[in-house]
Amino acid sequence: MYSKRLNGEESLHRDFESLSMSKRLVRSVSQKLRKRSNRVDGEEEDDMRGVSLKCLTLYGRGGGCKVGADTGEEYGDPSSRRRSSASEEGKGYKPICGIEETGVDCFSYGVREKFWKKNNRKSSELQESVQNSRMHIFLPDEILEMCLLRLPLTSLMNARLVCKKWKYLSTTPRFLQMRREGFYQSPWLFLFGGVKDGYCSGDIHVLDVFQDQWHRIHADVLRGRFMFSVASMQEDIYIVGGCSSLTNFGRVDRSSFKTHKGVLVFSPLTKSLRKVASMRYARSMPILGISEVSSDFSLIQNHQSRQDRRFSRSRIGGVSDVYGDPHRLSLRRQYGTAFDENECSLLPNRKSHKFIRQKNDQENLKGFKRFVLIAVGGLGSWDEPLDSGEIYDSLSNKWIDIQRLPIDFGIVCSGVVCKGIFYVYSEADKLAGYDIERGFWMGFQTSPFPPRVNEYYPKLVSCNGQLFMFSVSWCEGDGQIGHRNKAVRKLWELDLMYLTWTEVSVHPDAPMDWNTAFVADRNLIFGLEMFKIFGQVLDFLTVCDLSDVGRNWSHISRNHVAHELDASSCMTKSLAVLHL
Image (cartoon, rainbow, N blue to C red):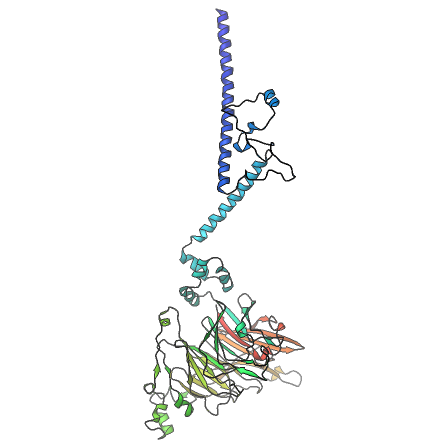
């Protein structure tokens, strides 16, 4: 009975041993199956990413085939490595579940795992970048538009190259109108008429005042043209008149030249040039004035009678014949019976004229502003001074003659539009104004006139509804250098009510440039001096903020452009300013 008990314990002990062995076997099998399933999932991800480990070459980096180094590894079963039959019998390897699968893998042991981890890391980085790009792509158009609206112009031009959607959003009329009316614009200066190596290259030098960076835009259309004038309106710059050499094309040669009457429009936002209607007369260096007008503005079609009878209306001591006498009684007294019923049409009566009332679809466009461009004086086809003028309407795209200047007014040297009046200044120190709405000239007698050096002609600028003039005069007292006085350039302001000049500011630089260019926009006045000294051409760019109490000048750029230009650029240069 005792022996039976021992036999029973031995059989029970053998059962426990077989059970523990089966547990170890099941555990190892489950681990292998789990590893196999993970490898299969990794291969499917590799296939989805377009990475196939089976398509790699069978030759390693150092040469030699790796076949036989590791087999069956692509199925996730390390036990199926290639072995000899002797080693299999000696170590007792037997297939556990089914028939043993064999394969060919060109990776040594452990290399495949490293390669898989490396590609897995790259795929995760790619997925993150795709998610970030999707976050930007699927932004609402309104938010994306507001982001683009706040970019500087240089960054905005680069953003347009990202995709078609960004380019479309940043070029719509609504976007341009919002940018024009917003507070995200900065001043840009455009320098025209540069001469290099004796040739008019047509390059436009552009200064980003906010970032203090110069850019260059090449315009083949302007190549060879010089002595033209420019005027800016909204986002465009109008290039009017000019001349070009007939014998030496491209060179500044006035021995044989052709005077142009064509008008070009330069759009900095698109870097394009287009043509508009040409002037009626060819002019070089005309005096320009540009102003916005209302949509119901009317242009007088027939000015022939005004050109024949050139009478001057003067404004002395703040009393105007036109504004102070709405019924024209003073004019009737002045001319007595010289006007009969037929000659009464000379008076500025709107009922006696034919008007041009053009309706265009552009009026209905949001943000479209109608404006007029006036060209007066300049030099004609035979290099003769002109006293005629003409006006351009942006709505009808036509030029129409205006009344001529008074006979004794002299040659116009400067002009600007201020509060609907086109003011012009002559070399004879006379001031006149053309009423754009009414269509006639008025003479102004101011007192006292600012003193000036005869060799330097005054320059008129308008800023925030105020009329200013730059004049060069001799400085006395503390400005003496040895036994000679020093010449200074002063800024004067004209009181439009009492017609008196008041000194406002003194320019810090000595007046070395005879043809200094001044432009104004909003509350800023920019000045560019360019001159040749000691065999080198220098340029000084200054700015004055009129909103500042002191109205001081500051330098914003020195010797960045003129070092590569010729000295003739000092006389052919033109300057324009835009807020973009």
